[in-house]
Amino acid sequence: MRVLHSPDLLEKLQILAGAAKYDVSCASSGTTRRGGGGLGNAKGYGICHTWAADGRCVALLKVLFTNKCVNDCVYCACRRGSDTPRAAFTARELAELTVEFYRRNYIEGLFLSSAIEKNPDYTTENIIAALSLLRREHKFFGYIHVKAIPGTDPTLISRLGLLADRVSINLELPSARSLALLAPQKQMPALLAPVRQIYEESAANQAERRRFRSAPKFVPAGQSTQFIVGATPDSDLTLLSASETLYRRFALKRVYFSAYVPLNDNPLLPALSAMPPLRREHRLYQADWLLRFYGFQAGELLDESQPNLDTELDPKIIWALRHLHVFPLEINRASPEELLRVPGIGVVSARRIVRQRRFCALNYDDLGKIGVVIKRARYFITCRGKYYGGIPLKPEIVRSRLLPPPAPAFYQPSLFDGAGSARDE
Image (cartoon, rainbow, N blue to C red; front, side, top):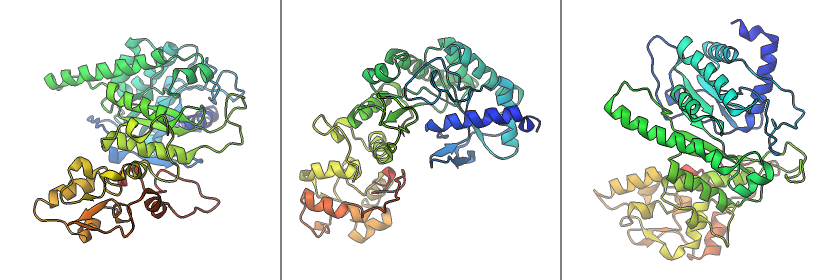
């Protein structure tokens, strides 16, 4: 346990763990990495989660390799012009720190991001050295999620992908205009180049593994990215359209949204006294869930006349209120695709409805047992021809019934409250 008694290393850990808390794209699941005689495993149920001081879910040992940066992105805490304390791990320090934390049962894996010290290749080589020590010297088979740095030589990206379970490239801002305004050193084509490379190499690796099971895995848990919400005037439509494109073209596993936390005083940024737009972040996650699992498209949820999500109700309810002409749907005849459009019916409950009605027609009382959220679904369905909503099917009346009660003054929304989580639609 030598390294944890080093005052210098503990100071580095405090600085670099604190700098990493603004990166929310640290979920850990979707892969299994096994090895005989080594440490750890990457099964989803073996990953520990903790909570940061600002309430965000922090998985794994979450640190930056270094916060020394050559870029001067206006919104970033690590920007070149910031007077924040600087630190950097050595490859061996980070590897030994991860192993000691694992042995003490503090963590089950590693989430590693980094600023850009000197240049992308120099930083990536140091990260590869640390991961190589973990995988080969320490025989560490736990989950590793690492951030790739745009501008890195493709050969280094390939080496990185063979060592990590998930690789992500944070695009941060969804439009070239916003990048030019707040991060002039970054350009969209350069940011997308490693995203495209990882997608193409992952597809080639999967084909190779179908032929040769002993072939090494390349980024087996896929890739993800993150967008900052509220630092620029970009609309929710812009954010969701960018996410939809990434899912469709590059098969991303997840797009994360991070409510902008005011850190720097600059006329291009929201005032330091501004609150992070957490409710907007919450609605974007719900809309993103609809894109990924419910068959919606960004253009169905938003358009140029209404480019931002309603903060009072979840986007599925808003879509239903705008399309009341398709409701109410008969629960015993609606197709699976139509059921997924009903507020209060999720993927699991829609599947149960379809399975159960093969044997007999469903009663209204059966729906709650199946998992349907009756307090929302009742206004949009009939059951055996009977409507149980109890009110006229008019947008303003239904909306008034579905609005949540007023929140206390100290209320702060999270991903799991409000008008119901995106998984339970």
